[in-house]
Every structure is written in C-alpha cells, then in structure tokens.
Image (cartoon, rainbow, N blue to C red; front, top):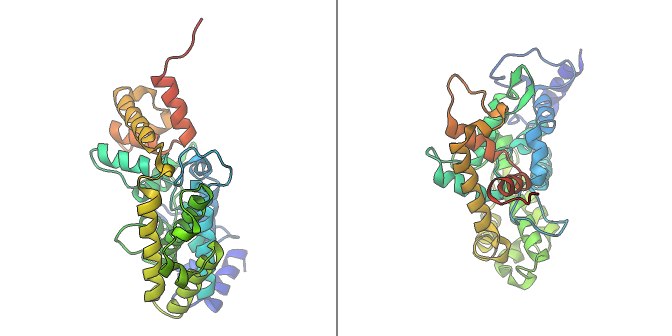
Length: 335
C-alpha cells in the first residue's frame, strides 16, 4: 500500500459520511498519473502554494490601500486566516481538511490590485464585466504556468468549484466549499474590525452592542463564537448552517463595516486614486497590447486583446501597478 492509498483509506474510516473523500474526486480537466504519496487534494494545495499568483497576494490590498503600518492585513494574510478558520471547522465536522485548505488558499488568486476598488473598476469598464472569483478560476485553469509546456494548474473539479463559488449566489457542491464560503466572511469581518480599530477609524464603543453581546468583546472571542456555532449547527448534517442569532449578529457587524469602514472612511482615502490608475492602465494597454508580457499573449486559438489586458492588470500587485503608472504616466528626469 502506498502513502496515498493509505491516506484515502484513513479518510474513508474516520471522516464524516458527508465528507468529500479524495478517492471519490471527479478528477481533473486533463487526466494525470496519480501521486503515490499525496492525495489529489493535497497535490492541489501544493500547486496553489507554489504558484506565482499565490506569492503575489502578499503585495495586494485587503482593505487599506498603501498603509504605513506593518500589521494591516494583505490579501495573503487574509487568505491564510480564511484557511485556518476553514480547517478548524472542517476538522470539527469530520470533513476533508485537505480539500478545504486547497479551496481556501486558492479562493482569491484572481483578485485585483487595490482590493475591491480594482475589482469594481474592471467590472465597470470591461465589456464582459469582472468578478474576482471567475478570474481566480481563470488563473488556476489557464494563466498560471507550471513549466514551459503546461499552462494551468489542472486542479480537481472540487477545488475549482469551491474557488468559483466562494462568493455569489451559487452554492459550492461540497460541504468543504460551503465552509470556505462562510470562513471567508468570518475572516474579513473580524480582521477588518481589527484593522479599523488599529487605524483609529472606529473605536470599541462604536461596535454594535447587540452583535457584540452575542459574538463577544474581542477578536478571538468573536471568531470562536462563530466557529463553534457552525460546528454545533452543522454537525452530522448535509449542509453547513449557522444559528439564527449568530447569523443575524454577523450580518449586523458586516453592515456596520460597510457604513463605517468600507464606504467613505479614511481607510478609503486613496481609493479614487487607485481606481483612476487602474482605468489609465486598462486603456493604455488596450492601445499598446504589444507591451503586455508574452505570457499573457498565448491565447486559446485567437487573440482577445481586452482579455489579455484584464489578465495582466488583475495579476498586478499594488506596488507593480504603481510602478507601471509612474513609468507610463509621470515624467522622468533626464540629462
């Protein structure tokens, strides 16, 4: 018995009957020989971690654009917090942690520079709209290059499905994907409160009292309450659920963030500049497609210039977008 089959056997013996077992995966877009050490979901996780798109997340905005402090979240630290929360829930419910982790680590690979500000701009100005979850799937299916001969990470159906459906109205096909969808919200609500408190945008006394009374007074207490509630409500069930009280309190906190942090606060003071930069880059590269790196020009059969531009800009980090803006739109000293 090799290592993979041993793990698959353990999964079958110890995981919940509602878990997605590695051996029951619907497979990959392109058939590959199986690894004799790792399961299909473990390989997916490893491919995501070793991708360039994953490394770029460390220089992409979560909420605060270009903060001076070292402790504000980035898209990478957000991703890691989602992964930690999701794995804890999956373990508590006896579901597949490897699948859960792979989905969590890959869910934001297609996110733009400057957070949702960049996403909103591309959605507004591109002819087919833009959604970061759809772009994340495009990253793992096509844009990421493992070597000169292989485009795309060729992930399993279950991981791809979880990445695509981690936001929006469509439900993931696995409980592990459903966990990531909720864990994403748990993570950003709580760490955005933490960052807003650190930045002096809000104070503890501003937080809605009803929600805090139910969820807890501290960052860790609130996450603990939310996680325990999901495990308790979803135990031995075919759907991931939350209690009404915790769900309503969570929604109240989220609404508070929209009203006091996400819209119009000083956390967003650089947002219009970021949006204008993304627009200028978009229109510049539409007019100068030859300046887009070659890796974005290898298209499926025919050359879609607008898609090339979107792929290139969405893949940029904040600092790379700023660098290109300075090079393209600001005069340089000479002599």
